[in-house]
Length: 171
Image 1: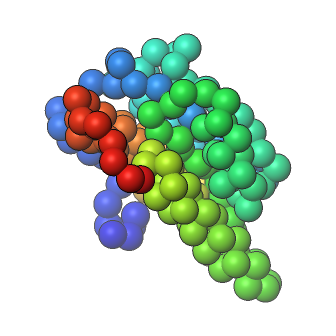
Image 2: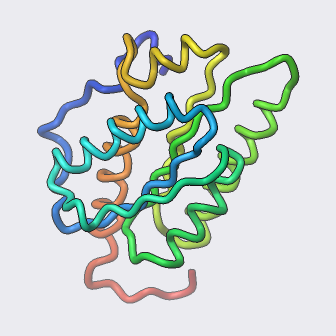
């Protein structure tokens, strides 16, 4: 659904599982830092709001959005997290670079999720211009970081619910 039709920061908070027993990784792209840091603040604050402990939230920065999957893999390998949230912003430019980057990041995160069985959350803005990005990083359309945090909590809780007490066979 287009964020013009749904505010990214609005959700049914009563339907969000308690995050107090969960740990999270957040990987933030430095490129477009004024936007990605706003996404991070929304994400981090939302995790805390739903019970995550500050010491269970592990954050690293990578140079740009293209590096998000590699950073997510590194963080996941170093910390025992239940979900990894990747935050970035790729603004459409004069060339098609944004299509290549966005596609590569999305596919990389899907591959990590499938290979590990853990949720790797795509919290990357893909706007046409800077104003659209600002509108989705705490502006009139809410904050994609909030949406990414809510998704991570829900997916981590779902994974935990279905993996408790079950022995794994195969992948």
